[in-house]
Length: 330
Image (cartoon, rainbow, N blue to C red; front, side, top):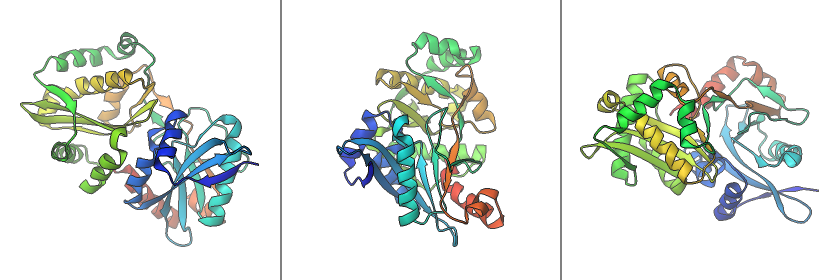
């Protein structure tokens, strides 16, 4: 019989996630960053009879108002072969129901087609977007360019010819300048941000799995693009431009630079971080032939109160808004 074992070793955890195609949001540092901003994290290995690790899941918990208690959530996971998936999901649900008394266990796998055991259901309560642009970095640069809209290719060439430098952001001083740009972007596009400490924590706790690029003109950043990476995948977390960056359209050259770097590093997938309404989605759609639909959000009800949560009664609706806000903030 397989069994769940808590993992308390960051090195062992990240080694397994990286060696088994895990998503950046399943890395230890992401759980650490969320744990100082309203969530808590558990990491579980599933062992077979011979004590071999055959699956893993980083579970984030968010406290909810009584009587819902908490939500257990697996972002872009778990990391497990399809043949062992059902057993891992059942073990997780049993453990969380017994020890955490959560209203539900929600998973948002990083796959387009995903089967779940009986008793699980597709949920309308998403935390991360299921629609995105996903580039296959196994393609050559020429193939990637051919998949783009003509205007996107033109703007890449035009913005690359501008007098600017693209480089990694490595210091807190430069990170602060990027966050200043982000605040301008948020004000212009009317979306909410976390406080600065949140981004400092993502930057430090994700460490080498956080890759932040910025475009500089006359030594000052005018745009930035922030990625989380694993051994196989890159995920866009945050990005923005100031007025000068907009005028020069540096986001085209910057994104193409990041994509090329990810190919150089041997990554195989580049995720644009979801599609939402507005001009940003129009910009993203110019980079690929079409959008990618991930499988979505699956829930395992763990409480009699799940019906209220799922149907969206007044209390549940209020709770969902509170829950989603820390993730919806960019």
